[in-house]
Image (cartoon, rainbow, N blue to C red):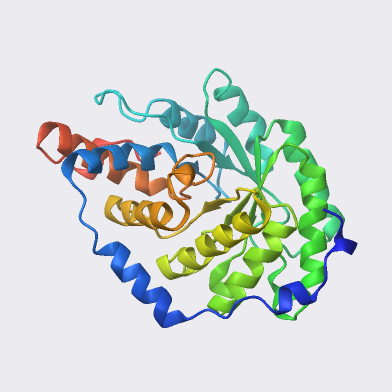
Length: 304
């Protein structure tokens, strides 16, 4: 979409969020009870939506290969497990991950655009996106310029996302809002609308590098923005909560929110992901408990 076709007022006059109403809806979603058979299906669905991630300064090719091995073989002692959705790494590790996952259905995602701060020259950010794609990335996770957004430079934020999507082409683009730095739910809604209008395939809460990652109220605001965008444009945009989701109970609560807000069509890894590597082991523990009636210790499952 061309930037000149967008009126900046479209982003200034976004809906005002009723925080009390959002919290009430989250509480209602969390009060839903789930039957045992439905819980097992939800656990496997959540597992299939995870992006296993390593984004550390001490990452090595060996560590990435080990993560890819886990992605392909989550737990040999448990039958009928789905694959995770993707492995997410830095651009320099994309080629390593791509080679390890060649014969699998697991995507390789790469962070880019000066992750996690986005505080590099824009041309450099675009070069990083192009490099990740040339190395084999199926998906790119970019960060928005939060400083520009908070200064009210919405057109600049829009233009950067739109240009990044142009470079991505058919490669899926996830736009990280870093919601903990946006201060208000109104800003989360506005940033969501800017990202989707600029061409985001997914909107994502967080980098996982700040003190506060995904929260249910923030996620619900983003889901409602996706719903309204779909009703307006007929385009389905995905959503990825990231950071702070480490247990199965919380993951299932997110799935309830997705189903109640967007419908069953969004209950697929194509439109919903979890950025939460530690979540995988807790889900495996819960699945094992459902199947055997016995809890295994956390050490029973590979941590990476």
